[in-house]
Length: 612
Image (cartoon, rainbow, N blue to C red; front, side):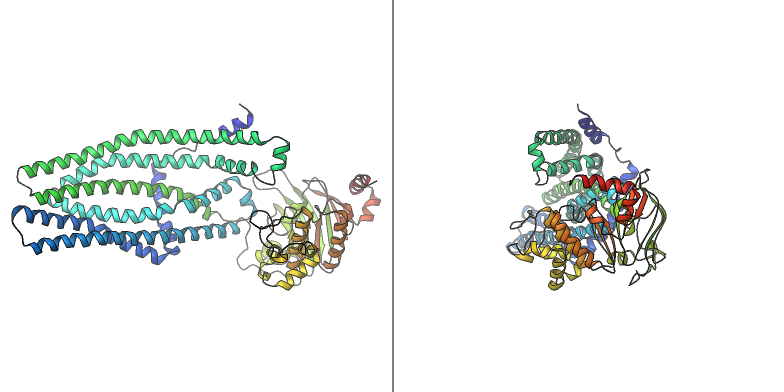
């Protein structure tokens, strides 16, 4: 077995222990908050569903009682015909009402399920958007988020189960009252006989949750393998490097292991569950035999026999159903732990109470003062004791090899992370004192891995300041500034053209064309600070020259931070910071750094040699 297969095996079979009894009971505490969510999602349909379930629940007892009167009337005396027809009509009416009420209840629950799914999906999106970058980089939190997305939509069955539980409990009580009137001890036997099956059902439900919990990382890898094994981003290498069989084999290995575990649990549940259900059947027929015996002795009438056998059968079935449904709800409640735990995750980067608004205009600029940073959960120092200023109207470029902390500086400046040590000041005030979203409004950032939204060209640009999505003029001006207008003019539907290949009629762009669209977002934002992380990586030399001619004009009087490996780009900056081993090795203007014959000059000569 290969190392990768061993790792996969370890990942899927290293089980979290099955939940303890205390944890199982504690899971029921999830029910009230989930009920609160359901009520918030659809108050009127919830009320309607409960009302009609209650009405449906009391009808079986009424039907049995009417049936008893009919049989007794026919058995012991000759009743008036109209009396019989009234009873038959009453039973018919009850049956019709049961059918109508049941369908109305189903309708209400369908509406509730749909609204609840919408409500939960929206809340998950809202909460996910509030989490900071560290949450998305934490595997534990990401697993919670992944399970929350699944549980938020898969737990819709819980809504219908709750409605059914209400109906089953009320039906059981009404039938039990009828049985208890003649022989109270029969109820005790029915409950005792059904109890083992309930315990077994509950036990296997919690084992199922434990299995699902520990399989989450493997299932996430399965999703990844499905994407890698069949997407336009990977298909070229898949074909040229012959990787198809490798990914299929890896996917098959994981799915085989998960299937083996799932089938083993299902087999155990089948054998044990069947044996325990037989006990319930024995209890039912013992009470049934007693009622028949009492009728033979003349102690019960034929109508009473019909009433009791129907009530016992109904009570037995509903007792089992109550236990089964309750077990299912307990199972669902345990799964809802994932959803509630996800909602409990809070961002580590947030605005303080009474946070300050960002200065408009910014007067002094940013200052990094002895800033050090390590990513959460890692000991490696990415930045160590970094100090520099970005003053108003200044353009600074960051250069250095990959992994030296250039992009990290950007993320710290805009507070996607908070510093591990030191301070970042804005107009002399720690950036942590400012309102976070207000800070973001004054910063326009385009990262190298910018998002390619599978939406219209206009909406792709409008993502830079979404409140301007309907302002066609501003969108067009931003496109002109980034030269994206030249790309859009060639599209069949111009600004209304869907970009990308996910949806029918979409048109995909080249890397350089997408980059111009992304740059337009930054220009539309019209922020006081413009940050470009490798903004021209996919552009040819001519396009790059045109873009930066515009860039120099458009950032006049603004602060701008530029990250690039191309020295033809960075030389336009007022000041260049050279990062090495997470520290500023040297800084200065282009010509000054060349004269120093330091690290910058060395990198410049290496790149220039490629063009000679």
